[in-house]
Length: 237
Image (cartoon, rainbow, N blue to C red; front, side, top):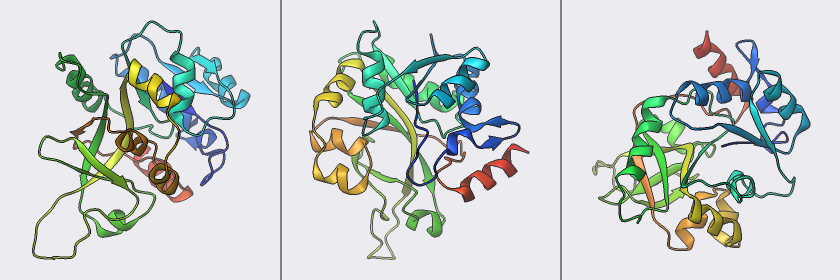
């Protein structure tokens, strides 16, 4: 499932911007399909404009309400009546998503026979301080088993002691849900930490759910700003 909102607050119409001759949302959809990991791939949108460009390439579209607070809420509406066990949410601004990273996180659920994991997601190591301190880059810290402790737009951990080595991880815009966890997400009210940071995964942590993070070294660009788009265009070339 690829949630796709036309009016993004930081970069309106970003999913319709040109990336190598096609809109960003089309590139993301094609990347997800080309992994060959999924039974079906859908774009879930409230925008007729986005719907039309996906239908033009023969893609699957589900129209949703316009009132959702997050992409996960949008997907929860779309899959409510579907007979599925696990739902993968790839953000619409992730045109560089790759099969290797997705397969790693899908295998987490295949191996979770006790069904203890509610949600899985990806993280990649980062070392550049400009990126670490950039509020558009969501950071995550994990415990010794790679379960998420917290997500933030601030640098976490804070480097008070410069002598202590601690890794920094960027949270990538991919979530894998058990369907029951996604249905719970839809019903749970947003709490202050999620509202403050504007990071939907925090809702799970605030309600005591487990998020398994999987490290990947495949880097790409999530297109949050016009500057990200220019970087993405250079990489695409």
